[in-house]
View 1: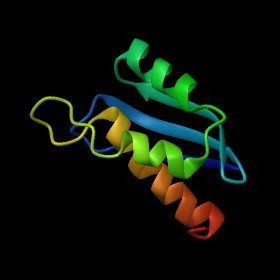
View 2: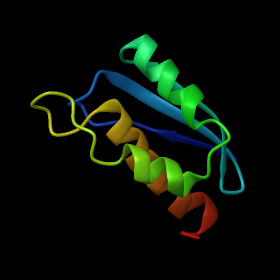
View 3: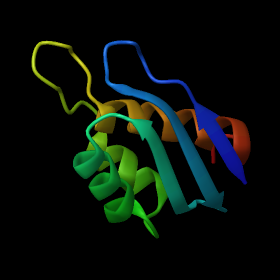
Length: 88
């Protein structure tokens, strides 16, 4: 299943495309942002269960913004979990 998410305008990334197989993250593509960081995070959570990725990424700040691309990815994963998996 594919889920698309538009992050907060407080971060540099413009879109997150998440591919899931059940509760496993198969692939994440982040459009925009700091390429090294966003590609790195995407590769690190590939194959991970959604809940574990959310726990690891949620609340990570980027300077004074109060959020970050990893934090926004956690929010995207929460929404994907709710919409695509019925909140399981």
